[in-house]
Image (cartoon, rainbow, N blue to C red; front, side):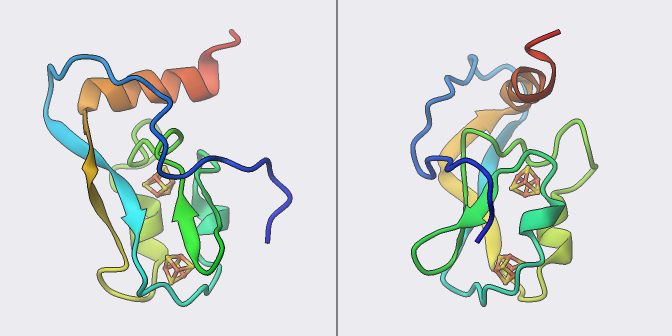
Length: 109
Ligand code: SF4
Ligand code: SF4
């Protein structure tokens, strides 16, 4: 469990801008997850939370770590191969991920 607000995984409230750059995707946690708790505290966007049975990623907050790391840090720390994968239902452009990063971290400035 975590004390953070409840994101709404699977619901793309964020509207991606038209695809202008490289196509990328938000990430998805599969049923291979063993609930080891490694990924949740490492996410710079608080996109990971405990779901009903396993951890889940809020597509509205996942930027593939754009603006923070060169590669998705949740994938780096996950001890189970192929557990955190790209979500084919959440294709976004790199521009969209950067827009999301700005909204999440700098919208108030
Ligand atoms: S890729 Fe980065 S932003 Fe997305 S869920 Fe993983 S750690 Fe969080
Ligand atoms: S690091 Fe991997 S196995 Fe551990 S909770 Fe996250 S997704 Fe599940």
